[in-house]
Length: 343
Image (cartoon, rainbow, N blue to C red):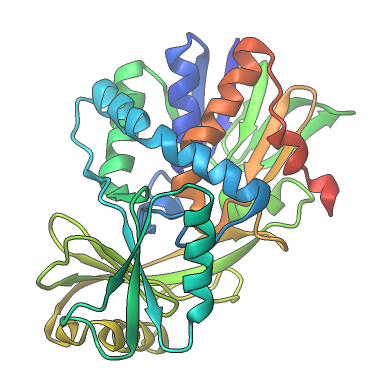
């Protein structure tokens, strides 16, 4: 079966990887492999720290448990090392955030691994305590994206640089994709276009901009996730994120955004005030009105979008659902749970 994957973010490339390994003839179409928001993501795998519930938590937790095997698969295929940490995440509880402690106790009562820790001396007195969610982790997404692109090369999955501007449909069936350079046909089409999903389909997906920083500073050993700041250690620097801005696709970093990142980071860890700014980042999260993904299924196509703040976390399970659908004709319940019909 010939499959076209539109989009080269983590969801698109992971789906292409899974399908190529199953023997499908896969091709990726993207207007720019470096444009994907995945490159700018923090890489936290944090369903507990995010406070997720219901079917979204269930989906998140299943994908979290897939991550060690997923990273190993990417490394094995690409022959590249991916920095991946499984030390848990510290959910920072600030003064007045007692509801976060109650949430932690609820998770612990359901059998998940949770510890409450006293505030360490390197954090400011604004911090009341830390919740250690031991099952969480994080990944260096730049490593991961490099490895996924290398895997495409080694698997012989071509990446076509073009912008898909239209889908020729007959009823519920896609007939062809109209690009600026060419027209493309396949047996099945998978659209992983993130915040740009609405350009091709009438779905309630919209961009929420996030700005972030790379800082040279004495690194923490573990992620510190707070309401006002994410402090994410990587091998070569500290990642500080992230703003949340409803500004459509207005690009670039702003003085206001970067100032808020610096101020909020130092409110958590005062020592970061001496950190050296190495570079700035920004990207566009694919948001939906209820914060859940949008999975749209047609007769021979699928749209996988709306992953919002958790696209990195959701990638393995999302790709696995498409593999199961195309290989084994197994339609996951999540295609119904996250259908745009709910709107």
